[in-house]
Amino acid sequence: MDVAILEALSAEVRELARERDAVIFAHNYQRAEVQAIADVVGDSLELARRAAAAEASVIVLAGVRFMAETAKILAPAKTVLIPRTDAGCPMADMITGEQLAAWKAEYPGVPVVMYVNSSAEVKVLTDVCCTSANAVEVVRSLGSPKVLFGPDRNLGTWIASKLPEVEMILWDGYCPTHDRVTLEQVEDARRQHPGAPVIAHPECRPEITAAADAVLSTSQMLRWSAASDAEEIIVVTESGLLTGLEKAAPGKRFVGLAPAMLCPNMKMTRLDHVRDALRDMSGEIVVPAEVADAARGSLERMTAIG
Ligand code: 13P
Ligand code: SF4
Image (cartoon, rainbow, N blue to C red):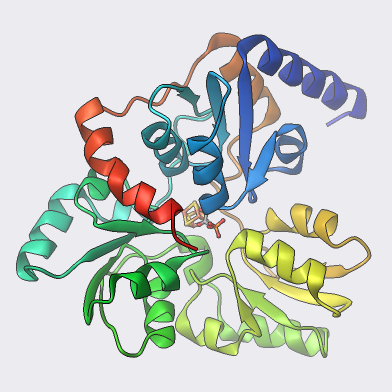
């Protein structure tokens, strides 16, 4: 986009946010120009915590639907807008409330931990949600020998590797963007950048997380990279994080995989969509009060851990 147009549009968005008493939240995978105008850029856990503590009347959530639903459930008095109502998370759609109810019935008394990448209906049936930033601590906090975990089998397998004392019973969901990464891609990157550490998201398959030097949520990657002595780092997560990494650790080189890892849903939101949502107050997230009230406990327990 032409620099003058970008600047004018960014200024328009900020002015509308002021007029509407709105805060703009962006996930770490959002386009650079959307991250640039956001009040808060973060991982799923940070966005959930900031939503719960928000003072503004309106929260614009530049991300995917489960993030906006989470914000609405944690801040029910706020108006929550999602600039692209069609930005979903395919993994979140891999388990429905009905499917979870049937699964639970097979394991009476076994606690349920669900990745925050899930629908509000699924959260109603969940004891505690987690994000990639606190998943191990959440499961450990239950002190249960057995846990039902979904929808991400890769995150579940990674938690199991950290907590061998817990039997993790896993739903068979996955993130299409992270699950398709191959060991060959990672080894190629290592060959081309000898000595560079590999940081990977726990949504990657077990052979990838086992081969990585660190397994981290997106914001943990930002902090890890800023604190690392390495001059070059291989990053195995959605390529939108490269924007934040370059800002968090200026002077370091960040290498993504080839081909680049992209989440089409995270890339849907453009600056003009954020402008339109604020101008028209469109894309409001509605979670029926009885669903939100029943789902809130699982999210509040999540935000309290880690
Ligand atoms: P985090 O940013 O919480 O690590 O999660 C990544 C993700 O799946 C967002 O969709
Ligand atoms: Fe869902 Fe994966 Fe996209 Fe995250 S990166 S929103 S888990 S599809």
